[in-house]
Length: 187
Image 1 (cartoon, rainbow, N blue to C red):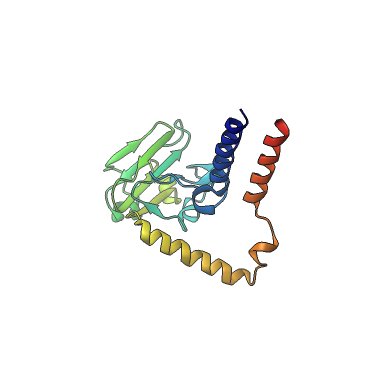
Image 2 (cartoon, rainbow, N blue to C red; image 1 turned 90 degrees about the horizontal axis):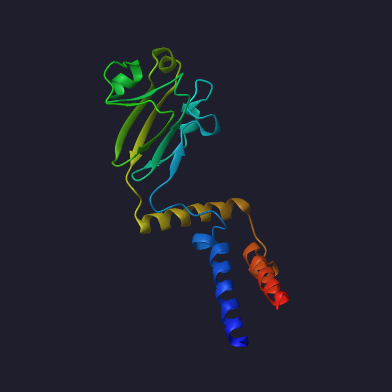
């Protein structure tokens, strides 16, 4: 019975460690799905004349496999996809290649290239309620690892010297220790 309990505790501790370190040590909840990222256009405000879609999108990277979500009032708004940059910039809305009218629409980014979305209302388009999404190819695993290393190195340099790893206990280690203590107290 005691060996069965130890085995159970080992499995539970292993699962907690995996969850706590989450996808390579990023922490709990920091994993991105392999399928891609879901981008809700406009953030908390959604697709609305009051939201600054251009500012929201400025630092976004749209990759093949990601999804763009449009959340809006279907009674007041619609979204159209346009074929060209010229139509997008001039708000020429009379030849859309797709229309979205449900109030909550998901657009899968299945291929690389430019995608142009606009409000179905001319006035809203002219006032900037439109999105140009430049979709880039997926990053290969090796390239992604190199990019992560570069970002981490830049963060380390910006943060300055850090105390040695042996001088403090990480959040993950504290979680594991706490969980193990709970398991033994339950005995």
